[in-house]
Length: 118
Image 1: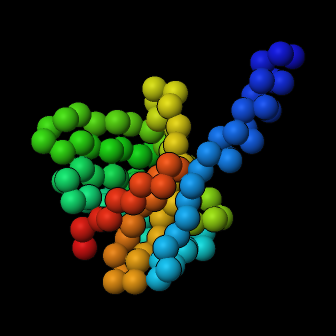
Image 2 (image 1 turned 135 degrees about the horizontal axis):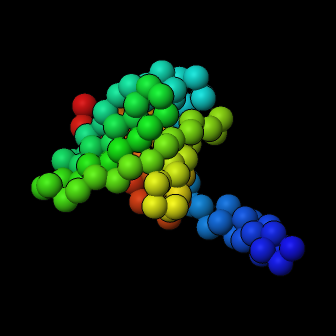
């Protein structure tokens, strides 16, 4: 019972901590458009890290410069976000937008913006 109570108390804190604030010119995705854009695709960031979204819901992030790979499963949400549950037990949700130049941008819960290569 105590674990459940603590979990319910922490959920609003996690939601409140998310600072997904799109900039002027950013466009959000609807769930279907984000699914079509990323399921089965690999996106590459400017540091050469790569996120791969497999058709069956598996996810990998390969760090640049042979820094290893993280494994998990992704879920596309209705609010232009993708949530990833890593096999290590860590989870995260990020906002996906296109900027005014049409570039795909990943915005973390803390507000950091990571543009992807075309």
